[in-house]
Each structure stands twice: as structure tokens, then as C-alpha cells.
Image (cartoon, rainbow, N blue to C red; front, side, top):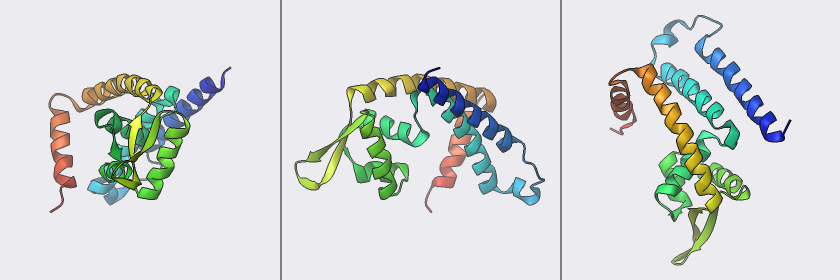
Length: 167
């Protein structure tokens, strides 16, 4: 069996086990069940478990996918701008991007006006991985739409937007 197949199966098994744990708590959570933050975190875990299993063949994590999406949409963004847009600490972003660069999916180029900052770009391999990941993500989003029902996506996104807004 190939290493990629082993990794994919391990990621899918972990995601399935974690998903079971997330959906069925071992203890009664009492008042936590009615707390927005708790419910959001549980929902995020369930959604991310599916994303992780979905991207297992690509060996891609949700944050890495988000970086690829932004660079695919807006090539040449600065590291600090991408990190800020995704809510990732600068030091953590550097480590994340180093991994994408090592895999040959993205690259840094010095910016002509500021030698201290870098412009970020997808490589050809990164564009191919992003295209495949987008196909997989579309299927994932369709599964979420089915769970949420008609109008559910729009309603959920509107409510989440309200929560995320800075007053």
C-alpha cells in the first residue's frame, strides 16, 4: 500500500472518530448546550472534520486551503495581508506558508518597493491542487446545504456575519 493511501486512510479514520466524539458527548453538557460559543465550536469541529477527511488525498488542511484560495483570487498579496485576512498570527502563518512552499504549491517573491515584505503566489502545482480542492470543497458545501435545508445557508451566514461584526 502506498504512503499516500496510508495517510489518507489514517486521516479519514481520525476524522470519523473525531466526528463521532464531537456529535455525541460522553457527558451531559448542561447549560453549555445553550451557549452560543459552545455550539459554534461544536459546529466548527464537525465541519472541519469533514473538510479534513475531504482533503486527505491532497494532504491539505483547512488553513492551507484558505491560503491557496486567497492567492488564487489575488496573486501577489503580502504575507501580512493574507495572515490578517485569515486571522492567523504572523509567526504561525510563516510556518504554514513554509509548508506550502516546501511542497511546491506556493512561492514568495520580494516586492520591489519594500525589500522587507514578500508577495505570495501559487505555483503551477499549487493551481492544480487548488482546482482539485475546489471541486472537493463544492461537494462538501453541497453536504452542508443538504443539512441546513432550503434557505439555511443564507440564514446561517447572515447570523454568523452579525456575530463577527465589530461593534
